[in-house]
Length: 384
Image 1 (cartoon, rainbow, N blue to C red):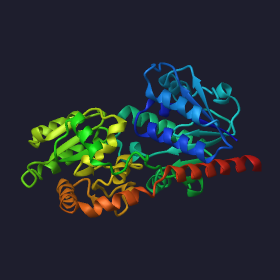
Image 2: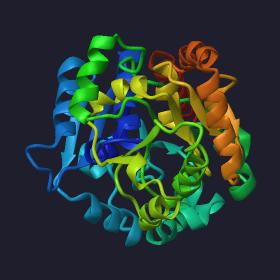
Image 3: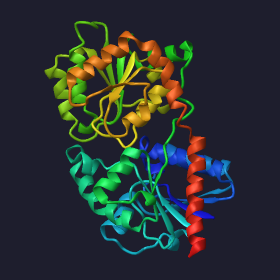
Image 4: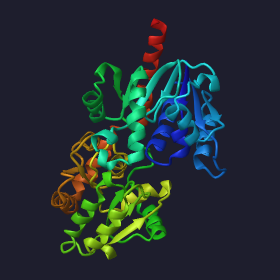
């Protein structure tokens, strides 16, 4: 069976959907050696230092059932052709006939093959005020078209499946739950590895950690308020925030001044992937007060490292964290502060429970499940 996978996010996006796409393809290639995976992606404008091109090349060299199919066009122009202008340039004309075309990033290309569409979340509908307006307009137009065309739809959580049914009327028979997983690099680490990273990143002795994009949906203003409420009880505790700047991030820096925590908050604009496991390990607790998530990779990564986690009881986050985290109300800064106090005062049960919960999410299992979905689509082909 020939599987065409839109690998554009895997080439152009470092974290989030980019990391998901790369790990998913690797897991599927391992689980389905009799399937052939044709990874097509917008290759126009890629620089020689793009690390994910090297990852894709290594993937194709490792697995004989993986082939790279670069398209000589930029991601922006490809989106304009396929989604804005809706030109019927079918992917088969570019890469040959496919049995299944899988779009792991919200929108399908033009195709006559059987189709699998991944919907990670519906932030643009559930929390429209937390979505960039231009992205919200684009997804509001493109996602419904792709949903109508998809033979099957994959979601990262039952929460997103419920949202699809509630907001788009998608019946459960068309939806398949496929939990992502956590990379094996995220685990409790020995102290000598931690000391090296602490020195390199100039980290404080005791700190809370947030990892994610600096944007309204991540609820960092309330986190900063909650952190300010802890100052008198934890005078040596700092807050480390790492992630790229998204949209409307200025209010976060305004809040640092407003809540008088300027000298206790450290922003790390970039942390190398290889340093992230140690960063989680070094934190006293990981705090993720998000307003909405389709899954929540940072929560799973922190759990896997044995770091006490404080997160919110909304959307998919209870599915990911289970009973291994402190769950709080994202709209209540005092409740967030109270959750942090619990994590700091009694961390050992959380440190023990985290890796056990994270162990339920394995890429091997995800790959096997995805291959079963591909075979289900193949059965549809045989039945027609």
